[in-house]
Image 1 (cartoon, rainbow, N blue to C red):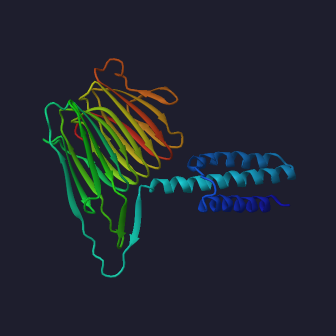
Image 2: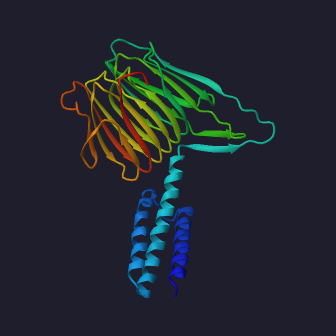
Image 3: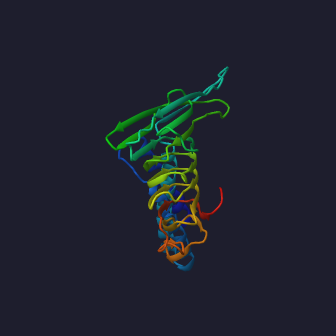
Length: 311
């Protein structure tokens, strides 16, 4: 049997079997990370040229087909997971006219509030943190009316705020859809942020705020993030899929980056490489304020730069 016949036969059989099992939910297949196995295909393919034995080439062809099938299935599942944010798509025909409603969510500031836990759980859209607000938080959501659930828990010195997108039917007409969220925050309290966003355009200027922790879980996103020096120690964690990421950190702060992003392009301006995945600014040890950034990305473009002037 020729190696190419074995390859195509096993590729189609394996891929078809995986899709069939998934469609009928016979087994809960969570293989989104298996697409990272694709370098094995290159290794085995190269070895097949080196070893000049027919039965070995047939064996390699079979293994390559299976690994490639798992990689293709995993990549597809990973891509679909990006958009799995409780969103149903509905395509409109005829005389449908797109219109966008504006909904405002406001929590007034109280001087006794020292810390705020702020969480966003949403899908596709545009998300911006803009200029500071005299309120504790002000949110303007432009899109479907009342598309978000706004919850708050207030205690003596702290507040917890959750902004969650509802299970939404998105009407698409000639490619038009709007889900735009603009946020203003108060500069007085200390902020702990946890944002779970999907295929999003994200523009966060956090330089005026006291940020203790920032966690970002994003899919196929475009992220622009500006950090400030208003708090002694800021912890930033970013888990990204196929994203474009730009982070600005102030010159006055020491910054450390730990990255797990072997398949991503990385540019860390004016950072010193300590070892393979660890980078620091020259003033890291002496700076009064420090920023710690952990990056876990799949196939992304990552740029971290230092700034002195306005962005």
